Image (cartoon, helix red, strand yellow):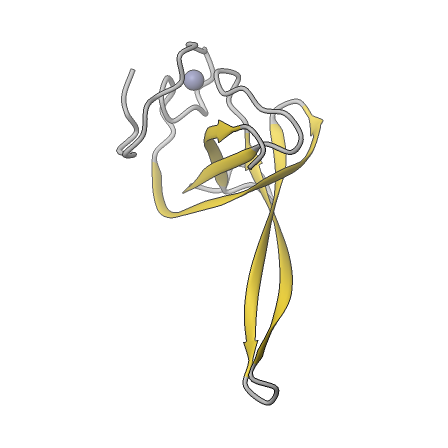
Length: 108
Ligand SMILES: [Zn+2]
């Protein structure tokens, strides 16, 4: 088992997934994002939503924007809807998935 080059504790459970950064061969590099899990309908994929503040100079205010990112969920990482998930960028795994969930914690 490897730490996947991330500064965080690996999951307690093991898994057999080759697309797991801790127990498989998946390399992570690039961005690390944090967001809320909004969908778990697919067993191995989660949808994460992030809220961003976008500055509008004309009114000198911020508007709230949302973005959804799909991420692969290795079996060793526990997740449920509403959890805060940390996802790390990896190679494209499917057409829309190029992130993998590396850590989750309960709702804030
Ligand atoms: Zn694993």
